[in-house]
Each structure stands twice: as C-alpha cells, then as structure tokens.
Length: 331
Image (cartoon, rainbow, N blue to C red; front, side, top):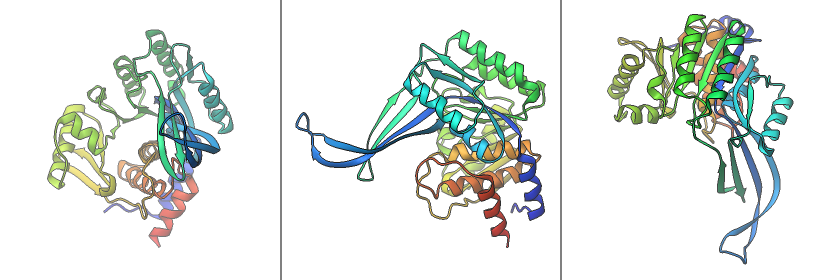
C-alpha cells in the first residue's frame, strides 16, 4: 500500500512549479467537426453532416506538453510539424497555451500529423488521418539532436513519447538516452511497438499491457503473468524502473526482479480513456523531477490518469484538481 501525507503532497506540488521538461516525439493535432445529420447525400448513400462547431486540440506528444504545463511545469516540446494549414493551427495553439515553440521544426516534406474526427448526433462518424509515418530525414534528426545538446544543462527531465510516426528514430533514441544518462537527467519513455527494444537504460519505461504483449509475444491475464512481464521488461531493457499500466487494474511498478508493487486504478466513473496515457507519463515525469520517489510519482500518475478518464475527450490534468482530490481522499 502506497500512501502520501498532505505535507508531502504540498512539498511535491510546490517543487513541480517551473520544472523544465523536454517532450520529444510525435507532435499531433486533433481536429473535430461536430454537427447533426438530417439527410442522406444524393451523391452516395452517406450521411450529410451539418457542422455546428469546429475546433482543434493538441494530440500525441503535444498533449503531454500541455499536461506538463497545466501541472505547473515548463514544457519544451521537441518534434516536427509540416508547412501547412494544420501546422499554422498547431503553432496558434502553442501560442494560446503559452508553450515554448523553440524545439518545433517545420519540415516541408511532411504534413502535420492530424487526426480529424467527424461527430454527428453525438456519434463518431468517421476519422480522417493526415500523416507520414516514414522516418524523418537525417537533417531533421540532426536539428533535434542539436537542440537537445544545446538545452541539456537546463532540463529537469525528458519524455520520449513514441507513436511510431517517424520522429523517434533509432539514432535519436540512442543518442538522447546517452545524453540524459551522461548528464543525470531523468528520462521516461512511453513506447510503441516499432522501437520497443531500443529504449534501454532509461529512468522509467512505461508500456501498457497491449504494447508489452505484442513486444514479447505473451498474454498478460493474471497476477503471475504481470509479474513475469515485469521481469522481462527489466531483463531486456534494463530501466531503473519499469511501470506497466494495466487499464482498469491500475499500475504495476518493478524496481528489481524481487521488488514489485501494485497500485489499483483511481477512476471513479470512466467516460473516456483517450489521452490517459499522456497524462500518466506527464505526471510521473514531473513528479520525479520534483523529487518524488518512484512510488509517490506512480501514485500521483495513476490518480491523474483516473481523473482524466472521468472527462469526455482528451483533456489535461490540472495541478490543483489532482492534489486537492488526493488530499480529500486522505481525509
């Protein structure tokens, strides 16, 4: 059982303020068209959506940056957008959110990764994806690497947020981890399948159940299989800590082969799990940067993931909401 006193929560919340976290990975834009369907198109047997509202939000690694900001930290997103209209919208969102854009590279050869959802009568009708999943060019790799090198002395933490959209190449992954370890910078990873085994020797490696099952070709279905998966993560990737997220079953934390702890989920009424993984890695990383130990950071991360699952759509976690809710539970 992991518990934190109110005094300790106050310390962590205060220390989080201003922590500089680089979020390196696949920047995305989530766009939405909301409306109603009143007729079928005469051109084809498809619904005609009359749009009432249109808006865009951060997605992918950009959503992690937003969560770092709403938690009180100073996010520095590092990634690629295109020289297109969606890229303009992305930069406008950064300006509105007062997020540092110095690490964002415009690549004329790629579109801004965008997921556009059409929702009519409160039902998801279709999603349109604009993306290029090929690896970024060497010149773009070098720009990202130079940015990390030039800013390494001011960073309190690094998040590698991989959605397999081509930004986190093997070269970048290996070089950035090396820089972090040589400079004692906390580095956490939210992986996907393609580069899973490249993320060796990080501070925290945080896959979910499916990613771990796919990577190792196993099924995780009971306590023993969770334990065995944790041992495989430690053996094959050698992180300081492995954190396995298990959805409604919470989180399993592995510090060594014989050191495993479980935290049950804190979701009260799950309405939408979208973006919960982004919130978990954000909270975990900034809490560690603020001096929390792995169990305190995981406790807060698990809590924040549960809170955002109570909301509809991708929403960030706010510092006061997280810490006030945890304190109320302690009463």
